[in-house]
Length: 394
Image (tube, rainbow, N blue to C red):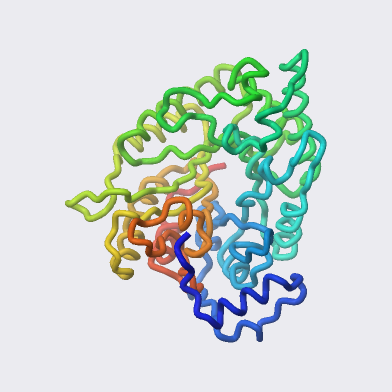
C-alpha cells in the first residue's frame, strides 16, 4: 500500500484510537479532521427513488488496524449518511469465520451486525463459499476427507451454511452464496479440495444454493463474480459465467441474481476518450443474455482502477467520474438491477491501494470519498445518475 497522506495530527489520533474500545471514541480527539458529507439527499435516498438501495462494504477492527471498520467514527459517519445496506468486506469468509473444521469464530461479523442494527442499516452476506483454493483456509486445502470424501465434503459445506444462516436469520436476506468459481481467462471452473472430493465444481455450487434455499426460502441467492466490460481476457470470463448460469437453470438450481462486482479498470487509455477502453455492445449483450435467463442483477463491489491516468488529481477525479458515468449509463438502463454497493467509500481504505497500486506510487483515486473524508466527483456522478435510471422491478 502507498504511504498514507494523513497529517501527523491525524496519524497520531488514529494511532491512539486503535487502542480504545468503541465506547471510548470521542469527537474532541479528532478535532483536526472533519468529515464533509455531500449536501443534499444521500446516495441511498437517491437510489430508493428507483426502488434500489445504495451501500458499501465495511470491516471490523482487527490486528490493530483502524481503517474502513465499524470502530472508525469517521468512516461510519459516511456510511450512516450515505448507505442503506452494508456488506462485510472479509468477516464472513471462511478464513475469518472457520479456523478449523469445528472452530467457528464470528466476533468480527457480529460486530458489524451489531453496529448496523444500531445504525438502522441493512446487512448483506458475503460470502457463504469463496470457491478458490487461494482463499480457502489452509486446513481446508489439506483436509483429509476420509473414506467417503463426497459425503464428508457435503457435511462440511452444509454445516457451514446452516451455521451461518441460522446465526443471522432475520437479519441477512441477501447472500453471495458462491463467489468467483469461474477462472479469470474463462477456461473453466476452479477446482478445490472440496470439488475434487465431491466430483465436480457444479456439485459444490449446486449443494451450496440448495442448502441456502432450504434455510432461507425467501432470501435473495446470488452468484457473485468479477466479469466486466473491459476487453481482452474478460470476454472469455463472461462466456464462462454465462455457461455456469445456463447450467444452474438446466439443473433447477435456485440462483436468483448475478452479482457483478464492477471493479472497473483503466489499465490503459483510449486516445479518443482519454478513458480506459471498454466494450459497450459486448457488455450489453452479456447482460441481455443474463436477464433473458430470468436472473436479476446486483452491483456488489464497485470501485475504479485509475492506473493509466496521469498524476494530476483534478484530472484523475474527473476521468474516474466520467468512466463511472458511462458504466452506470448502461447498468441503470436495466430494470432488473437491484442494489448497488461500493467496495469501500474512502480512497485510503480501499483494497486497491495495496492490491493494484499505481506505478507512480500515488494513491489510487477509486472511491466516492477522499482519504480525508470529502466527497469527490465520483460521488457527484452517482448522485446525478441514481434517480435517473430505470425503475427496479424486484
